[in-house]
Length: 219
Image 1 (tube, rainbow, N blue to C red):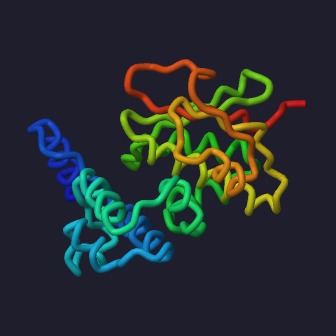
Image 2: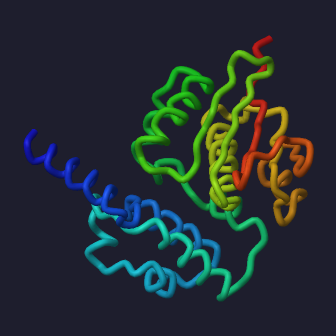
């Protein structure tokens, strides 16, 4: 217990000193693996991330958040791709994020699973925040991040695709609405099977990129 407390205290001190925030190295490994399946060179992406062999193999390793930008930037230099966040989601298997995936898959319903995500996203350092408005009918789920459209598109797509698979296609969001303009809305609709809209139909807040997805009707 004392050793764990010390690690938590040290992490808090690092944050207080203004050191760069970090994320689990596994999160970047997931992105690199997905990009490799999309035809990008894994070796160059690993180099861009600055990950040595120890970090690639260590389940507890953490890396600065800005490494994500380096990986995506390297991939776009190699070969530009529209809707990259969505395409990465299509190549991310269930189980890639062990804790979050377990919490969702062990839930009794889609609604409970999404609420688990909304709660635990804050604990694992995810760049996105989920808000569940279940007082509305249909239920509305808001995914948002500051200056990170790719993270929003990835998160929304991964949730929709994975819940669709786990419910054998019975999960049918009514629509997904982005506050920004994705590269190719028609492609997102084709991949997700969900009607999409974007732009002025949703209130914007500062530099936040949001997606609102009415997920489940209460009726």
